[in-house]
Length: 248
Image 1 (cartoon, helix red, strand yellow):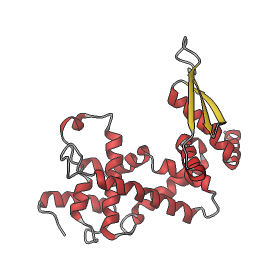
Image 2 (cartoon, helix red, strand yellow):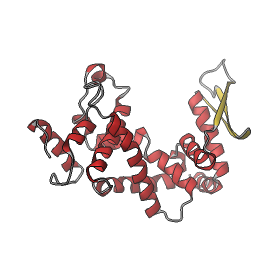
Image 3 (tube, rainbow, N blue to C red):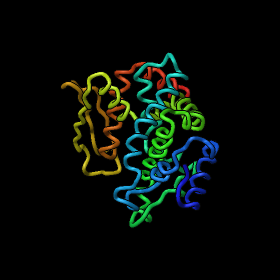
Image 4 (cartoon, rainbow, N blue to C red):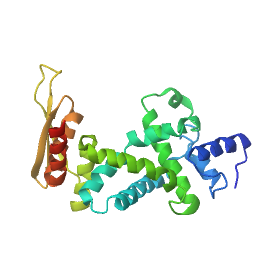
C-alpha cells in the first residue's frame, strides 16, 4: 500500500533501504509516514500514538537481544543495560545514524529548536519502530537491523559499567521487585563554592536508605546516590566495576 504523494513515498523508501530492508517488505507506508510527522505539523495526524507503541517495542527488542545474548545474566543486569539501550541519547544517536531528521516533518518553532532535537529524534525513532511492528505484528522488520546495534552497545556497557544510567536502572529494579519508585532526598551542602560538589542526595526505599552521593547539580547528586544504591542491591556489578577501576 503506497502513499498518495510520490515524493514522500520515495523519501520513505530511501529510509527503508538505509535500514537494510527491501522496499517490497510488508510495510504499511501510511503508518511510517505518520511516524515521521511531528505534532507541530498536525494536532491529530502525528507520531504520538505510534511513539507509545514503539516505546514498548524497543524495550521488547532490547530484552530479547539481552536474553538471547546473555542467558546467564541476572534480571538486575538486564534492567541496567536496557535502561541505557532505550534511553533518548542512544535512540537519538541511532536515529541520526539512519538520517531520520531528513525525513521528519516538523513545523513552527520546533524547526529551530536545537535543545529539543534529541527528544524529537528519540520519539520519532520509537514511532518508526511502532509503525514497523504494526505492519507485521512482530519484530520481523526490526530485528535484522536493530539487533546488531543493541548487541554491540550491550557488550560495551558490560565492559564499562560507568556508562550505566544508575538512576534508571535502580528505578527498573525497584519497580520489578516492589512496584514502587525510589525516593530521592536532596540538600544543598556548599552554597559558597559552586565549582565543587554542591548537593548531597540520599535515595530511600521503604523508609530504608539505600545510598547517598554528592554532585555539582541535583541530577548529578541523585545519579551518584543511585549508583551506590544499585551496586548495593546488585553486588556482582560492584565486582565488575572494581576490576575495571583497578585495571585503569
